[in-house]
Length: 130
Ligand SMILES: [Cu+2]
Picture 1 (cartoon, rainbow, N blue to C red):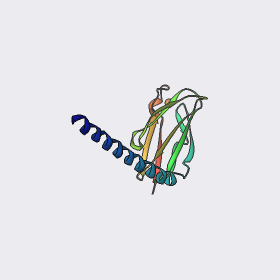
Picture 2 (tube, protein in one colour; picture 1 turned 135 degrees about the horizontal axis):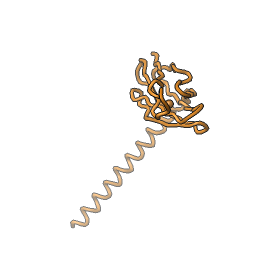
Picture 3 (tube, rainbow, N blue to C red; picture 1 turned 90 degrees about the vertical axis):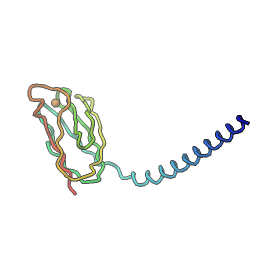
Picture 4 (cartoon, rainbow, N blue to C red; picture 1 turned 60 degrees about the vertical axis):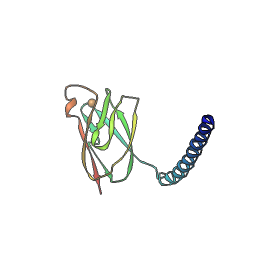
């Protein structure tokens, strides 16, 4: 008897999992259509002790793909307010980060990889306009 109950329970688990899978697939195709708009690509270069450009302007809701290039030593990008984790990159080995700004404002980002005496002054900003 106990075994039978167990079998039934298993069948239900499978049925629920299958239903969840169908829902996930349905959701995925819908989201895919919405996400088809390609991200805006911006190249951000770093050199001791500047960001080029120092200010990046984007729009709320816009998905942006930043390509991070170093012109000299290894640097890093960090912008907690926009959810960009510390990402290091070096000359000849660019890194990419993708993010979507959810609200307008001016957000400062900094170098997250010690690169010399004025490392702390290596600050730029991402301006998100409505
Ligand atoms: Cu740096």
